[in-house]
Image (cartoon, rainbow, N blue to C red; front, side, top):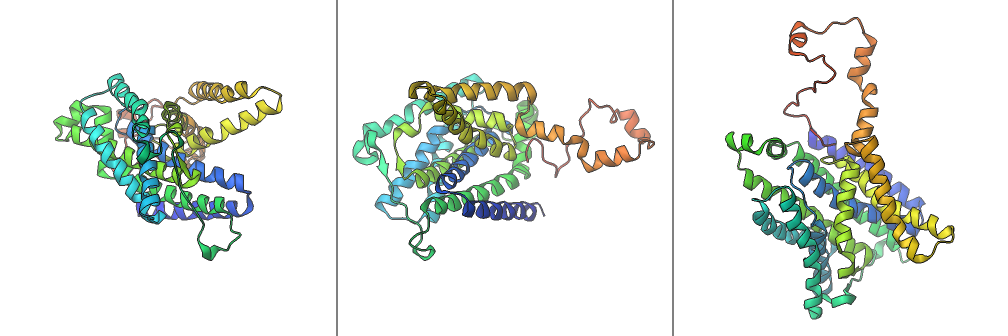
Amino acid sequence: MTLLRHLAVAIVAGAIIWAASVQLNAFRDYQIAEIAVYVVAIAGLSVLIGLSGQISLGNGAFMAIGAYAAALLMLHLNWPVWAVFPASAAIAAGGGGGVGGAAARLSGPYLAGATLLLAVALPSIALQWPGVFGGDQGLSVAVTAPANLGATFPLTRWQAWVCSAAALIALVVLANLNRSRVGRNWRAIRDDPVAAALTGLNVGRLRVLAFVVSATCAGLAGAMLAFTTTLVSPGEFTLSLSIALLTGAVLGGLGSLAGAIWGALVVVLVPTYVTDVATSHGLSSTVAANIPIAAYGVVLILVMILFPQGIQGGLRRLAGPLHPANLARMASPDRHPPVSEQQDGLTSPDRHRPVGEHQEEGTS
C-alpha cells in the first residue's frame, strides 16, 4: 500500500509537470529540468545526513562522476538516455562505496573534512587527462528530442520531461527505502550508534550503504545535468556546488524528501531572481555575480531562525492544528484521555508521540 500511494502521488505530480511545461516557454522548461536535477541530488544528501547522521561536503564530486560517465557513454557508445542514467548512477555508487568504506570510521568534522577534500580534488582529474575528459573545455554531448514528437518540438521541453520522470522515480524509490527496515536502521544508528550496535545492527555496513545511496542519487543527478546542459566541464563541479547542495538540504529540512523539493527551488530560483533584480537596478556584472551568495546567506539565516527544522518542518508545524486528529480533538474538548495516557504523560505538549513501525520519522 505504501508503494501504491507513492506511485499515485508521483503520477499526479508528473501530470502536473507535464501540463505546466506545455504552457511555459523554453527557459522555464529548462528551469524545470534544472530543479529536477537538484531535487535528486539534494534528496540523496538529505537521506545521508538526516537519516544516517553522516555529514558530507563532497556530493558535488559524485555528481561529476555521474556526469562524465554519462558523457562518455553517449559520446563513444551512443547509449540511449534510459540506459545512460542507471549506468551513470551505478558507476557513482561504486565510487560512493569506496569512499563510504574509508569514511565509515570517521564522524562529525573529520568526515566532513574528508569529503570536502574529495569535492576539491576529484574534478581536477579531468585536467590531468584532457584526451579523455576534455580538459578545461569539457565534453560536449549531443541531445535531441525523439523524431516522433515532431521536428519543431522544443528540446528543453523534452529535457524537462525526461529529468522530471527520473526525479519522480528516484523519489519513489527513496520514499519506500525510508519506510523500510533499512530506513529504520539508519535512524537507529543516527540516534545512538552504540545502542544500535548492541541490538545487533552492523553500524559500519549501514553507514556505507547510506553513502552508496547518496552517491547513487548524486551520480544520477550528474547524468541528468549532462543531459540538460549538453556540456560537462570541471567548472560545473566546483566546491560551491557541494555547498549549494548542503544548503538546499538544510533549507528544505534534513531527512525530508519534500524538503528536497523546497531546497531545489531555492537553489535554482533564488540566484536567477536576485541576479535579475541586481542587473535591473544598474549594478555591475561583478557585483551582480556575488549577490546570489549573499542571498543564500540571508535565506539560510531567516529559515534557521523561523523554522529550525527547515521549510518542510515549518510547514508541518504550521499545518499541525489542521491535522484531522487535532481537529477531532478540538471538536470534542470535553473528552478526557485514558488513565493510562494520563499516567504516562502522553497528554503533555512537550512529549512526542512514539513512532510506529510504519510511520515515517523526519521524511515526507
